[in-house]
Image (tube, rainbow, N blue to C red; front, side, top):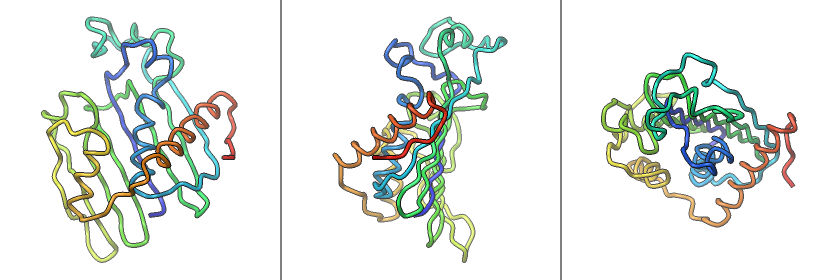
Amino acid sequence: PQSLRATWFRGQGIPRTAGGLECGVIWDLGSHLVDIGLWSTGWNDVDRVFGYQSTIGGHGGNTGLAGWHGDESLDDALRGVSSDSEGLVATFGGGEVLDLSVSWAANTPFDSTRFLLMGTAGTLYLDTVFGFTPDRQQKSYNGLMYSSEKKGWEQVAAHVAEPNEYRDQWGHFLGNMHTPSVNRELDVVAVGVGITEEASKSMTSGRAHVSN
């Protein structure tokens, strides 16, 4: 694989805990996508990391309820939050690119998690949803799709409605393709934490950070 684009958009996903709000959405949601990206590709030779942030909600008019905040509106839940939408781009020694975006307050019709993994033999596209959300049961997702230059998109695994989380959910889809997982748990976690930390620093400095 040469390129992985991942997104996790939640419409009412602002955490209620002070720790969750303080750490930010890149740690709350983005760290899981980084972990799964490294776990499934085997990339570990990080070159540069650039992080970015923006605020989509909290500008007034967001009167919808903020999920875990009870009767509190999205605007009220986002007071004091520096950003509700963040992302990062990480490049690796072999030219590989990890590009991800996450949001607590995306203006989307329903929550979604998507992976687009492109390589020399074809492309994998995962359309599902992570986390605790009623959309898992109520919405229709495409599951895992595969395409190569010789054929169009083919569904190889349906969406999982049961609450399997993160690696387990991704592993379910890869298992349907008989693809072995990368079993380097500590290395994956260490590199993933480093990437997320460098992205957070980059949001403050405004420039890309070079991996040590």
